[in-house]
Amino acid sequence: MNGPQMTAVTNVPADRRRAAEALLEETPKLLFIDGRFTDSKAGGRIPVTNPATGQIIAEVAEARAEDIDTAVAAAARAFTQSEWNRLTPSRRGTLLWRLADLLEQHADDFALLETLDNGKPLSLARGDVDASVEVFRYYAGWAGKVDGRSVQPVSLQGWQAITVRQPVGVVGQIIPWNFPLNMASWKLAPALAAGNTVVLKPSELTPLTALRLGSLIERAGFPAGVVNILPGYGQSAGSALAHDRRVAKVAFTGSVATGQAVATAALASLTRVTLELGGKSPNIVLPDADPRKAIDGICKAIFTNQGEVCTAGSRAYVHASIFDEVAAGVEQEAVNLRVGDGLAPETQMGPLISGGHRTRVHGFVERAQQSGALINAGGEIPEGNGFYYPPTVIRDAAHRSEIVQQEVFGPVLLLTPYETESQLIGLANGTDFGLAAGIWGNDVSTILRLADQLQAGTVWINGYHAVDPALPFGGWKSSGWGRELGPDALDHYTETKSIYLANA
Ligand code: NAD
Image (cartoon, rainbow, N blue to C red; front, side, top):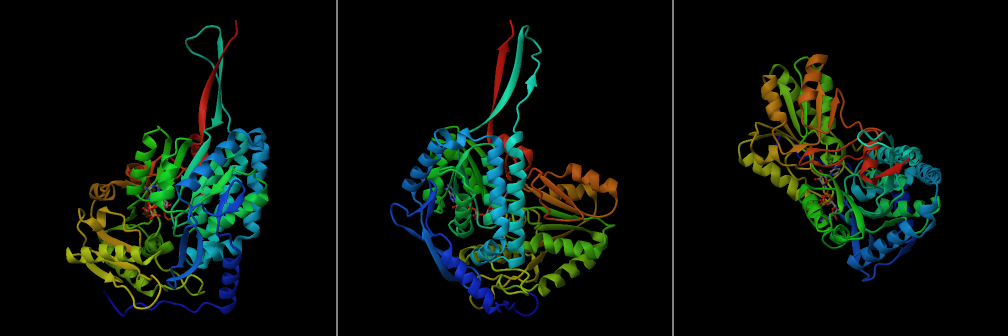
């Protein structure tokens, strides 16, 4: 650890605190099943904690296997028997657009609630809401465009053919706690645009914005049972959803280990599965990069959202010729970053999601230090309430070591110099992950050559963390199966049927 211990910013304006309390009060706390908020059958409760204070701020109903069973039955009924399957695609698009409008109207409320539940700075939470609105609008536009093709058979005489794309049926969706509302929008929007019905299980750690979205879904006019939202624990509710044979497709975002469990559960019934998993993304600084931009870019890539981002640029590879300057700048910026309650206006980075997660993150840092790595900023758990952890910068970690190979999912950055392009590619591609990468520099040929060789679902050049609904998002290698966003997501929510017509 370098420098004095971090002190968290906690001066939340009183009016903001009151607004947050009022919102909490009126946010639904029950399960959203078949168009109504209803209690769980066993009456279990999930305590919801504000990571900035460590205090329990709400209790929501806990879905168990029997509630998932009821919700899947409602979704199956809605798929086959409700007005949903008779709605024109244009009408489905209108409902999605209306949901986007409602979310936009209540954006401030959703942002406040997300910060209370997840801890992220309010401005970031507001950005998540705006991004979610865009996702619903983008797929509203797709609802009437999920077309098949007219195909000319190549080996048959007297036949014509068309393909049609149809919804798969009931979709089970399981999401994590780092972008609760945003992940819900990525999952719900394409599934609904394609005409499916959904059972969504938010993370037990962050159920509030998803439940509030349930009220907007009701107000937007979606028929009962089309969307069901059930917070619950992974081992019970999540597992029940992944195992349910009536579910035609499971879409999962979370850790690699849970993704493997979900895929294994789905295997028994050959349920379709898409997985958005972890990452250990390289962020590369070329010798001709502007050092100032690279410093800011490296910090943004790792410290945004407390580093609890699947695409976090957790491994910075900086050309040896500018390494000292860039590394010193990054370490200084890390120490200067204001960590605190996401509701406090000066806060730039919030607390981690839970005490347990903070212990896990710190364990990685301690083991890295024990194995010889140098901690040049952060690296110590501060005193006081809340699950704060300082921006942490590590040099000299061995490539094969745990800290380089595994996802920490916190504000922990590795800085490594490189000399040659081939050495760089070996390091950058040298983990099991392949979610994202960043490149900072000016020489277009070098940049394109590198972008071509990087094993990653997304490559950012002279920027980081830009995500647009029109572009597919997903991982290579252990970072996942399939793609979300873009037209690509719709492929996972439809089955294609070939129809042959004899014309003689
Ligand atoms: P997690 O795997 O612990 O939990 C994710 C979800 O799965 C939660 O809703 C949880 O309740 C549920 N779950 C847990 N056990 C289950 C089981 N046995 N069966 C079914 N469901 C189960 O992940 P997390 O800690 O919530 O989120 C962090 C992880 O998510 C990180 O690894 C991160 O990289 C990943 N992530 C990936 C992306 C992406 O798009 N690739 C985006 C965000 C987060």
